[in-house]
Structure formats: C-alpha cells, structure tokens
Length: 175
Image 1: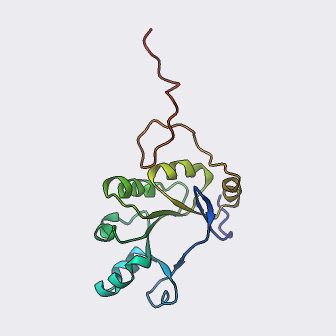
Image 2: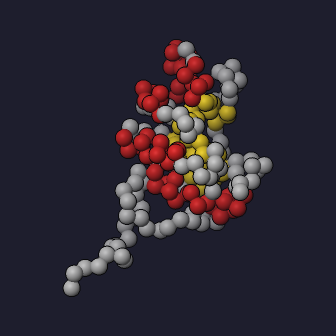
Image 3: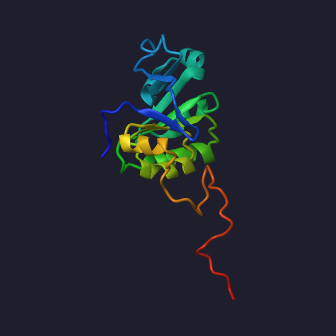
C-alpha cells in the first residue's frame, strides 16, 4: 500500500525535481502562484478571456472517469496535463496518456498523480508520462537509486520506445 502521509516527490528520467505547480481550486486561490494545477471542472469554469490570459501557466488534472475530449482545443497551449491514478488497480489513465501522445500529439508535460508505485513506472514511461508524482516511500528510495523496476525489453509499440535489444530472444528462426 502507498504511504499517503509522505509529501509527494516529482520524479523524471533526469531525477527528482521541484514542483513548479501549486494545486488550487479557484483562480483567486492561484493569483499569487506562477503556475497552477486545477481540476478539469475548474479549468472549464473559467471564462474564455480568463482562460486565454493564464493558459500558459495552467496544468489540468483529469480523473480516470473524465474524457480528454474537453481539453482537445487547448492541447497546443497547455504546458501540463496531470492524469490521476486514485488506486493502483485503476489503469484508465494509461489509455489517456497513450491517446494524448499518439492520437492527439500532445507535446507538453504529462504527469502521473495519485497512487504511483514502482511496478507502474516502466509502463508509465512507455505510454508517454514525463513526470511522476510519487508518495510511496519505498518507490522514492528505489527511484533515487536509479532502479526503475519493470521489464527491460518490450515488443509492443509505445509513445516512448525502449532501446533496441539487438533481437528477440524468444523468436526462433527456421533451420
């Protein structure tokens, strides 16, 4: 189980980094923040003029039951989208990450939030996540040591491909 009491750390392939985004519930809450992370509902509640003024410093968090379609008109200007994993067993955000990267061509920061554990890291990277918000202390410790867990080789296409292995050990050639 995750250690929910631990303050989340942000991890990227380059290591741990500071969180530039502050979670806010209203535009007024984030007035002093350079960058804000808001829910989809909050983002859509902004007036068009407000949204356009601040879109370059907004991140939007989607819950598993929320569709990415509402963000499609804004993808080119949104610097960050966070996809929530409220439970280890809820994998709907993997599909959203793949859709955002492959079908919709999203190039900004894609962040995984919530119940992020070491067993998920390799797959999260393959579907296009660039930042992981990790609260689970054993996962933080292993990532700090450079241990990403997972399987080193994959044969499925992905948003972020694995390094070439030189061949497939399981493929048998006709003699």
